[in-house]
Length: 67
Image (cartoon, rainbow, N blue to C red; front, side, top):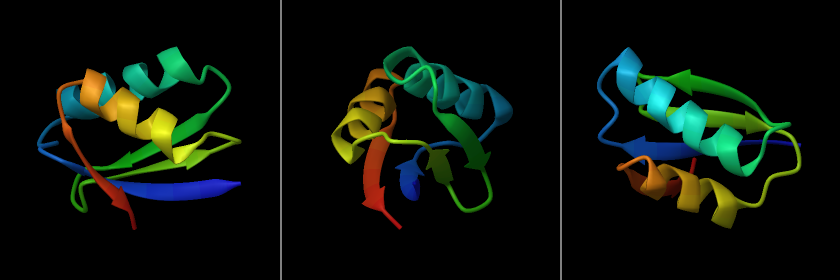
């Protein structure tokens, strides 16, 4: 299963790394791709949107919901 979510506030590779690490911490088996231009993160695997929202907020960014 794959889902894409908007992450507001991501502006650089450091931001992308922070979001990726936060998601991996809560869902180690997820495959994550960040698109900085679109301010989106795509997650491949069985991960609930609430887990992604928590991870994004833990990383210090605003969760914009599914795309």
